[in-house]
Image (cartoon, rainbow, N blue to C red; front, side):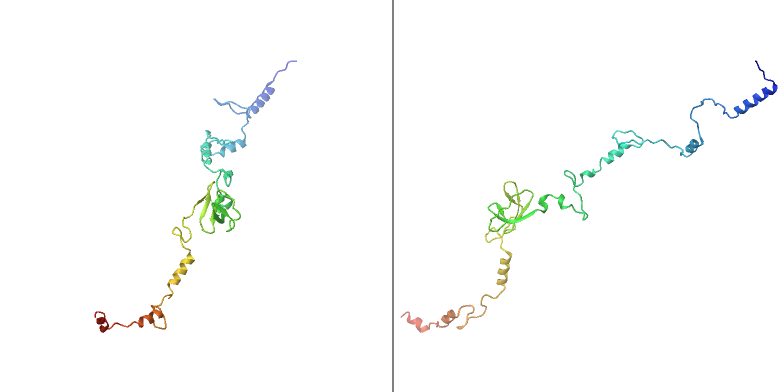
Length: 230
């Protein structure tokens, strides 16, 4: 059965429509509605962003060709200049410094602290002065001859002297021992030669016998000289 609105019903319908329209916003030109609701939380977040702020994206890895606004290619170029920590104290890397500011002995070449003393003879080094037990020849080691104090390195085929060529000895090509030199000097300072006149009972600048012989010589007289020519 058909129905119609009387004036009372029509007034009620208009009132309901006005109430619903009061909950809506007016559509503005150039703007469209979306399914995303703009809340007070979003508004607060926007108000906390400073004027002129930009969105920054950081790459998840360093790259030499990145065009990222933070210029990570520059950061990578600087990091490439730094020493890799794995090279510290490793073969082919760099030596470390100990607590005393010096390179630990374990990272030094062996010849720096490997000094072997022995007796050099006939192109070989021996442990004893009697030249009984030969010392093994090794590269990167220093050998000191106890007798001459000369220093050698093993070249791979022979011992090469690396010290001064001056050696101790008693020949024209060697230097005298210090104790010998001191003995000679001390002797030169003592009174080892007579400094007084000789007498017939004591030596002086000549022996007593020579002094007696000299005293027994008498001068020839004039008469004796004339007698020689008669």
